[in-house]
Image 1 (tube, rainbow, N blue to C red):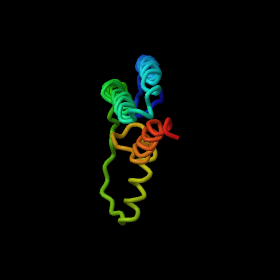
Image 2: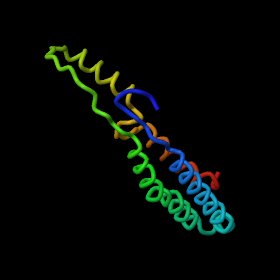
Image 3: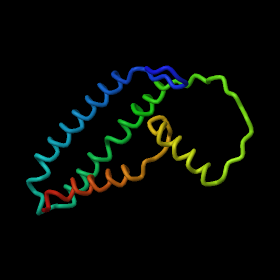
Length: 131
């Protein structure tokens, strides 16, 4: 924990829960693959449906755990010294960019690059047996 306006509690419990959930999810995928890969070329739609279901089933399970992890971040409001100041649009953009870089782990924003990467990996995982 660092001294400053943001204090972070322990994530260890949540990381253990996520690890256990991912292991259970991987075991479910392994078990499903044993039975669904045998008739793959006779009924490919069955493999696609089950694989998509397994991939999608982790989302509603992991989301509440990660959302709960956010409660470990505590913001202690410092004493502010407010002054009026005029800044140009480019300087304001630079300040906002610097703020997002410094506090990216604490902001509730969607990282579209990681979302795109997850979609690509999911499609690759479903399509791999056909290669």
